Structure formats: structure tokens, C-alpha cells
Length: 305
Ligand SMILES: NC(=O)c1ccc[n+]([C@@H]2O[C@H](COP(=O)([O-])OP(=O)(O)OC[C@H]3O[C@@H](n4cnc5c(N)ncnc54)[C@H](OP(=O)(O)O)[C@@H]3O)[C@@H](O)[C@H]2O)c1
Image (cartoon, rainbow, N blue to C red; front, top):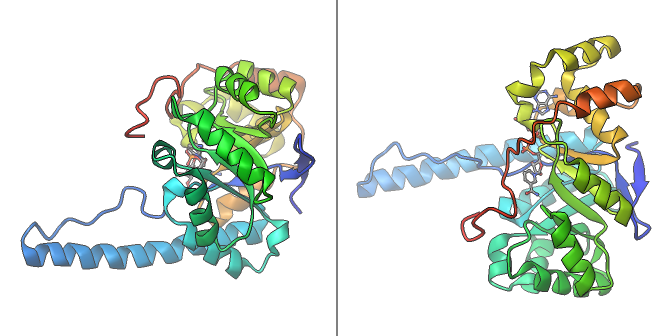
């Protein structure tokens, strides 16, 4: 059973999450040219490819749940909510035992569609509440109003925990001024190449749990080749990824990891039988080079993101 910690509103969150991401990440067949027949063939090929990929996607989410994951991280932006719903049903795990997360897209925020978008997600996920709902990015000029609408949905009982993603301290300070409801979670990019210490410290002081996405830095070469990490991994007879995940847990960050592979899904949660020393934690902290793999919320174009 996956261990849990308490959020500032009394609900429990599992210590590690799986983020299955999007089903058609970067796939589109255009090999038959632009003639009418060519376009039709492209369309049929894409449809068949989608069916194949969707089956694999459902299988990998079912495998994650059956391996022991209970926190499923999702966003309406990924466009596969119906597949998540199928996977949840197929897993046979009780709804109450899962911690299902979703988030409103930037596009939906820009359209001021918070309520409608939330209920669309709920319907596609075939759920009657979401465990953790957040906005995907603090869209400049919009995120405060989005938050106020999310607060309404929370008060109506459709959301167990309300939170945010990609927020700097100044975004959260703004929200605190606007509403009496404090975010429970801030989901941001965290990994040893980008440790986010000041933000984590700020959130901890406010009682906000940090979820770390891109938690293993997408298996980035700059990380996995580091002799310091290799040495620690050898000492505990663990993989470098397991060391990084353990580092997150001991920093009280909830790592969200994507893996569609059953063996790696199991590897990534087999991290509860060892403990890093203080020196090892500091050594991993010192890997930080402030290198983001995703965007800086203060410096991106929300109309295209
Ligand atoms: N809120 C946001 O703005 C935001 C942004 C980005 C991501 N996220 C969330 O975070 C999740 C994960 O982020 P991410 O996909 O950017 O990065 P990630 O989890 O750091 O890396 C995923 C990659 O690592 C591989 N991998 C997983 N476990 C491994 C292991 N034990 N050994 C070797 N390789 C391993 C996966 O391949 P295999 O599948 O082949 O194992 C996949 O290619 C997303 O799916 C999403 O839910 C949120």
C-alpha cells in the first residue's frame, strides 16, 4: 500500500504519483501526401495509430495502478480523460482509494470557461469528484479569477483538494490576498538539476505540499551520468532514478513520474527500504545548476503554451 501524507485541509496524498501524460505525444502520420486520396489515407492511418496507442496507454495506466500507484496526475490539456476513466474501471481498484488529479488548461482559462471545463473533465473521467484540481499555469491576468471560480467548485464539494501548478511565490501571495482558501499543493518542476530550494521552503512555511514534476529530469544525461549519483546508487544497490526519487521523498516533495513500462513503474516505487544520509542529501542538493527543462511561468507565452 502506497504511504500517504496529510495536506493542510486534512486529506491525504500518496507519496509518489504517476503522470501518464498524453496518448499521441508527437505522433501524426502524413506519409500519403496532400491529394484527396492521400489525405484520406493519412486520416485512416492516424485513426488506426490512435486506437493502437490508446490501448497501450490504458494498459500502462492499469499496470501503474496495479503496481501500487494511487496518485494519477492528469491535465485536460493531455486530451485523454476518457482513456484514464477506462483504465480506472479496468484496474478494479475502488474509486475512494485513488487520488485523481486534473487541471484546467491555459486555453480554458483564457476563455474564462472554468466551471464548464471542470464539469467536462469530470464527465469524461466518469467521476463525481476530483481529488486534486489545479490550474496548469498561472496565466497572467487570468489565474486569480480562475482561482476564485475553482474555490467555488471546492466549496460545492466537487474537489477534495485545491491547488496550483507552476506558481512562483508571488503568484501564491496574490492568491492568498484574494481568497481565504490556501492552496494545498503547488505542482512545479523539481529535480536535482533544478532543486527549487527557496520555493520549497516558502511552500513548506505556508503548509503547502510541493509536487515535483519532471521529477527524474526526463532521464537527462547530465543527471544520470554523474559519478556522485552512481556512487550513492551502488552503495544502496539501487538505480540512479531510485536515488533521485528517494531524495524527493526525504525533501518532502511528492514526485510525479511518467513511465509506461511495468518494470520501471515498479522500480520507481521501490524506494521505501533505504534512507539517504544527510551528507548524501546535501551532495544531491549540490547538483543544482538551476536548469529548467520546462518553461518559467514568468517568461512564457500563454497564448501558445
Ligand atoms: N504541471 C505541469 O506543467 C507539468 C509539466 C510537465 C510534466 N508534468 C507531469 O509530470 C509527469 C512526468 O514528467 P515528464 O514526463 O516531463 O518527465 P519524467 O517523469 O522526469 O521523465 C519521463 C521519462 O523517464 C523515463 N523513465 C521513467 N522511469 C524511468 C526509470 N526508472 N529508468 C529510466 N527511465 C525512466 C520514461 O520512459 P518510460 O515510459 O519508457 O519508462 C520517460 O521517458 C507528466 O506526465 C505530467 O503528469 C506536469
